[in-house]
Length: 136
Image 1 (tube, rainbow, N blue to C red):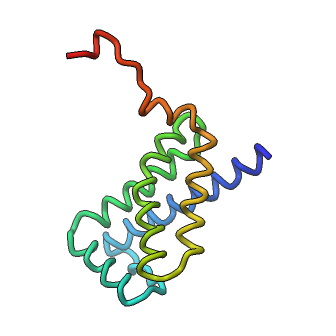
Image 2 (cartoon, rainbow, N blue to C red; image 1 turned 180 degrees about the vertical axis):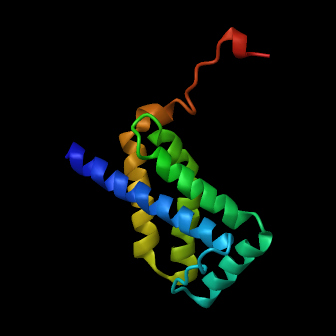
Image 3 (cartoon, one colour; image 1 turned 60 degrees about the vertical axis):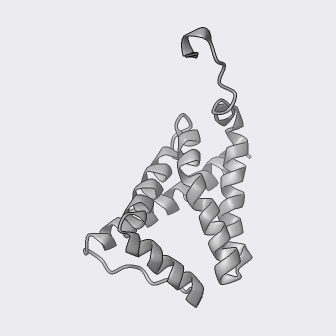
């Protein structure tokens, strides 16, 4: 079971690394921007994100960095934290704008599974002990 979870995590990580690299290459004009099948509302949302001038490059960077971090046990929790906001947006985009529950739910379920697997490390984000040296 441990091997299967690690394999799934590696595939998940590789997906995000590759999507991040593909998006970065498209932004640099090296390859064409990938065409995904989506609803008119989702296309408008994606266009609005692109018009900001910073969201799509930020997504490419976070996808690649988060994916790379998830290849290593020690840095997987950081990768999860980095990818989590984007995966939540992917989930709601597919659910609310495309009416497709499968694709977004799969991303969210996998990330939740990894977060559960690495919960002791992630728990420290909100249970950090405060000592006198950290008080103001």
